[in-house]
Length: 197
Length: 236
Image (cartoon, rainbow over all chains, first blue to last red; front, side):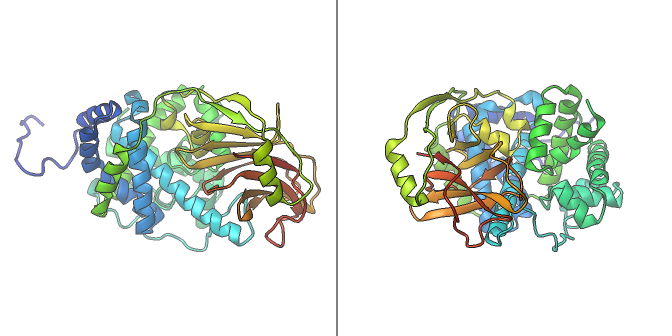
């Protein structure tokens, strides 16, 4: 694209310039609370939305979001730009935390039922909406380029918080196949979304 | 690099490995530059899936996060030195034992692991606790103790690692208990005839001790320990 991007007053461009989010994060690492407030404004919808998608319960999602955002505040100095963008880091933390939360909640339930330690989840409930309700056009389009098995494997793991072994059970497939589909599905998504290293 | 381990990159980026595989993969990751490069791209890809789920948070969240941040100190890489308690055996009830041990624990210095800068981006929940800057490592005895508890106050999570308890048969399971003022609460039974395992625990609460008992296969039928602890770790 040759034309210069016009700057309109108002809410600003839809895509966050990653460079400045990275810069904000370095300011946060130096204890700048104002930078943290800005960082909150730019990332809280993504953090909360992802937490909500994975843990489902709004109150629990709020709790997870608060923990993640505080973790960002506390550990901003440990962000390493060479290992990805600030947004990628924050969403990686969010997903971990959300998945920990669902697995922990499930483990507590299992414990009450007296079967535990390896902590199997309730696999009777198949999450059939994970691949269907995506707001983001490009992500939706790229998910559409995956094979059905790739799409289901990636969706159940990422949005459903399932392990690959659980995903294999849900899809009645071989766990080794599911592992492979997760990887080749991500490769295809990466290329479609134009994610460069 | 085994091709099998490499296929785990995808599942790892989606947080779809169980704790043990996650730990194994993280080990592998340290020596596999191809994996790290691919992981960075996969995490960025997964982040796009995450962004696609964006949703406005409740209005009160902003204020509570900012208020919490203003009273929360930020982390720096540190070496922690924490007391470890002397190993003890108890013959009586767990609750009484917990009270006794609090009074007689013996401090031993333990040096926690130093942080590495890139850890947060690649580690799973178990390593995250074990590598937390404020991790306290508590063991059921000196040297190679069979039960270790890694506790991070900032993460409010602990990892209980059990290694090489005495061999038991198929009719028995080891069961872990968190003991607080109200008595023992089960942290779950290990599979029968199993002497080693790892578990992430997020609800230690006010527990003062983690203990292990031998129970019938699958865990205590009563929900309470049926015998004296085989090993115990004092948390105070």
